[in-house]
Length: 256
Image (cartoon, rainbow, N blue to C red):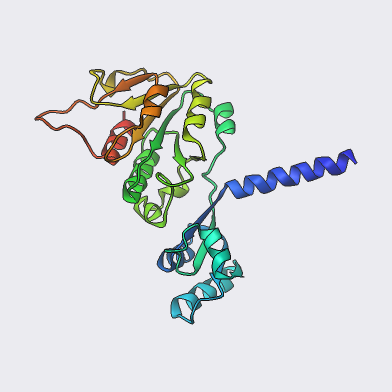
């Protein structure tokens, strides 16, 4: 009995880990592009039984047949639950294996002297993609993204990252505040960007675990995150410029 329980537990953990490393994208052009890219590892193609015959659907099925990718058929409601975007999924969704997705507890346990960027309500998918690309190219060890709503990964964000999303360690969370609290309780310093401080981002310590929180394009970092942070920093600017695009700020932080 104990052996069976251990086996069931291991299978559950493996299944949960596999699910956590899966990204589902949607939209016909985005899915076909992902299927055609040999650097991407699709797990399963989901198609709605309500789809009318179309060449792009036939092309997807053909690629899946050649690459031995599983195809599953669903009614329209079931597919919308998979894509989580019934208005824009166009009757198709694709599960992609994301080796770069990591668990926050494992990251804390296995990493020392790290620098992370966390996105708090960033909504523009192009900004998200460019932030991923800069972080991957620079000195950022991981990104923290919300798996719901703002700051989530969309097909446009994948495209804007120019493939670097499959290389950059990403911690997805359903609760950004709770995740940041966990890091903070494990000797990680939390910084927010603010115009109401004189401390330059260039003057912070380099030999500490730290997270930079970047906020919404219009409203900046939320009040909740400001209260959680240890300190606010600023990117000094000249000639009366008040602020920078969030992706530009991420680039500066990535190459400190």
